[in-house]
Length: 460
Image (cartoon, rainbow, N blue to C red; front, side):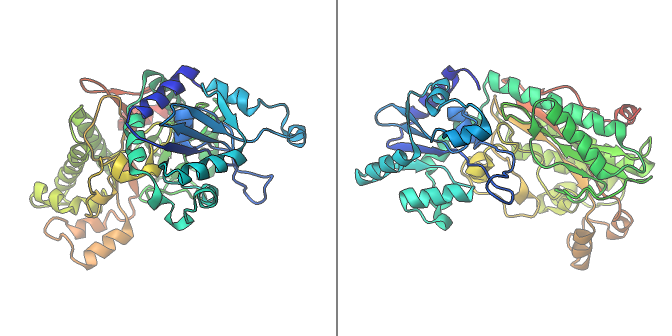
């Protein structure tokens, strides 16, 4: 945990948003894998962590905007629990570390909420994503589980997004620690990538680095020779000569701040000429996007710069044709780059995505419905203190190529006969994490090898 002053200051800043009533922050419960006493690794809700810092299941926090007090509700362990778990701090002892003096059992929270409703006081909630929390809201507030997200307080969502989006110095320190562990995960993969090894072996070694550093995974590891599948969590293939290996993996440190990096590695000692050609276009788009970042620039424009650079590169090698500005405006480049250039990062690796992408990434404005553009998670104007990823890629997805070719879609911009020869190529992306500063940006963490020469050297 941070010092209790941090959590007190965060809750006080929330109070300054001129909300009335109560804000209810639900912590997470243990989540069983197959029976109650065999749970998945516990992960606390990020907004609860942000405002209360208590990394323990079964808690709920209340910020009372009207009386200026904060509360933690939870049940202390019984002797039977202590037999299995050992001596644990009481709820009161835990709460004092977050600067909260008012505590009570969970059963009393239901009474407090029902009394507030009877008084006509507003109870603000965030969109729940765990089914057990949806059931709590049903039992306590009468909100049907299917309608829980729709009953979230837009006022509270906007206030939390505004506050969590700008990272403090102590948060940046934590993120940078996680990024440095993540760099070590990727260097491990680069050194062991060779013919005959399995995807699972690489994934296991990468996971070990995060665990040995006192952390966990920030998200399920993508470790695959099929990089054209954007979120490929299958690890059953054996690497062979001529393949490329894509690793997208990140560490979450003990404070639950995350890193998120991607690397594309030749299975052989060096890239082939064709692999290098596509890799260099991807890297050029990556660097062009980075150079565009600064406060006041819309991240949508950062993304479009990456798109245009990819389209120009594909035209240079004969896969695209025509006016590139028109091609990007109409979305023809999305055959090769159907996703976004990056996202916010912090306590969540896609920071605050549970609160609603339209608020986190679009400042409440509607998203595009165009294929490719609709997958851009962050389009809003960049501000100092934002932590974002940059990760453009080039992907040859056979099913998408076949569909567009059969429809003659964007045939004025795409040379389908030439593209046909790349259908088994796979996919490439590099990814780095950046802090937006007052006058530009700063790379977070140790540099990760990203030129073809540097990646090849890291394999030695």
